[in-house]
Image 1 (cartoon, rainbow, N blue to C red):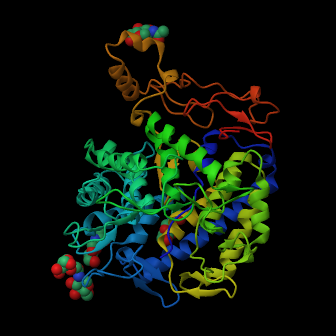
Image 2: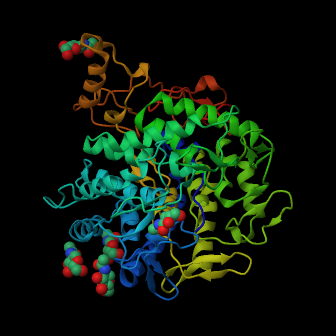
Image 3: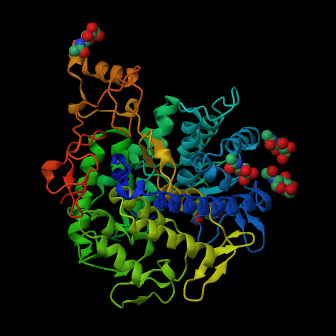
Length: 568
Ligand SMILES: *[C@@H]1O[C@H](CO)[C@@H](O)[C@H](O)[C@H]1NC(C)=O
Ligand SMILES: *[C@@H]1O[C@H](CO)[C@@H](O)[C@H](O)[C@H]1NC(C)=O
Ligand SMILES: *[C@@H]1O[C@H](CO)[C@@H](O)[C@H](O)[C@H]1NC(C)=O
Ligand SMILES: *[C@@H]1O[C@H](CO)[C@@H](O)[C@H](O)[C@H]1NC(C)=O
Ligand SMILES: *[C@@H]1O[C@H](CO)[C@@H](O)[C@H](O)[C@H]1NC(C)=O
């Protein structure tokens, strides 16, 4: 199983802003986007229906043989150790598809899934699972779907929903906790859902495995009112951060019992990427400055030590010296992303170099395909980055990119029984596996690229598996000072004031796109200063305002758009 996942977070916040601009008023343009959206919808249902027919309630579909695999226990398990004897799957692909069903507006199917899961899903199974994978796919899928089921849109029939998904999520969260019972608080990479940590379990884990749990477990704590999930994830994250080198770099693998590094080389690719992503996203979701400070220091170190011209390589955390020179699809987008300001170039040059438009791993120093890594398991990173870049710039070029992704996927990976991974991009040899993230991420980001109506009423943070979590003022631990309404001084304590504000939603980010009902009227967030031009175009930083969601100053990109570009 390839490690996960890309770093597209830098543009995450870009979609916090923006209205639909210029070219979209052209009816031909709107028709094109609608046509592409429908094409993505067809792709999603081809994958989904085949899963439901040939694989459900097992974990994932094998599209070539039209059969199934109970892969939850295999994710990340390279040596296929400790495979369960008697495990019939956990409907992994269905759980991973829940938020996509909602985004595509299929409330009836969403409802049937909720009913089936609540009657039939149990986590009391003798299966050893990867904590990171199970967290992002299963816990994240359930928590996100619960939030979507309970928001103000009444998606489900009356009386159908009685917090069943939250009950399942809480049960799963409880089963995660024994993994954190280590001398360091860093969790084991593996947990048996029924029996806890197995005897002689490996103490080796990855940076992502310890540092990418906070969104899902934090959300679970906010929803249940039980702080233990968030505390466990936070303790692990803080311990991990305390293990950074004097250069603010982290390694890739470590030992959870001793807290020592095993692999000192790291980069922004496999094993580390979602650590950075989650620091940033946790800051948005929970409003803690602590996350921002960690992220900021880590980000500067990445820029300093991993960057080589437009590319990012790996480096030894102790010395900052370059180690591996390989660029993989996992990290293909850091440059283009952090540079939404200045370097759409990297995206386009990468695009042109890539065989078959499907980004295989790429060797930096040889300018050629990597001889052994030709595997393309329908990874979503490219679609995800394209979506964020389009949200940020509204440059129609990204729609063309998206169209090309859609066409490539249909041409090379669609088979009668679903969508197959590509084993070798040079020969287009297929593999008999449809990963659940094809439905959770690839299809979802492509759909949102062409139709972002889902994002109009509410800000969301997308987890690393593509599950949306709404940015709620009631989840903001510590609102930035600028958020504090002057009238709150009449309240007894600042803490009480914040709670009150959150509860009564006295403050909410409110622009034309991001409007929450605030006691019947829309109130601007205290810090929000709109951009000078409503289309967000700009010539200088002075024409940009203050972001309503996180109260940070926006600046003018080289492309001439106001945004939250990092550290330019
Ligand atoms: C899994 O399926 C097999 C075959 O249908 C069945 O005998 C077994 O009891 C099932 N295991 C569990 C844990 O449900
Ligand atoms: C919802 O999904 C089901 C299963 O694929 C499908 O039969 C139905 O037509 C879909 N409904 C809508 C409104 O898309
Ligand atoms: C739960 O599973 C059983 C056995 O597969 C099935 O008969 C039942 O209809 C399922 N429940 C729902 C709501 O689909
Ligand atoms: C665990 O390790 C010990 C010592 O190496 C060994 O004696 C024991 O059999 C192992 N237990 C299992 C379940 O593998
Ligand atoms: C401040 O709060 C009080 C009591 O809640 C209210 O009567 C008053 O109108 C508020 N003042 C302002 C300026 O919002």
